[in-house]
Image (cartoon, rainbow, N blue to C red):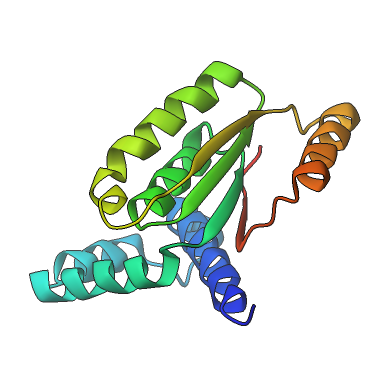
Length: 154
């Protein structure tokens, strides 16, 4: 259970980094040009180390991405799948969810040879009380638990 705390912290830091990089005017301390320059300056070995570290951190963890069918949520879902996490997404549209599941399977194909990953999509409109109640019942009835929770619903 203690390994879940750093993952949640990592997800929070990642989300904040994304927000600050998108809205630098709201945070004058963030210089997007410095971020781009630092990332471009990374050597291939540094990138490989980062890839390995993320794979070790996320492999065989379970993540729930609420709002995972579009925008930032979609990209976070794909990244989690790429680095080895089991990913469940929730969005209002069934077909959008199935499309993202196929994309996650595609980006995770190298991982699937080493260990099985599971990808699910649930179609619930969590902007309504009824949708929240129905999804909560599904979680309770199936005993679904997650190591990582990402909230990106707009």
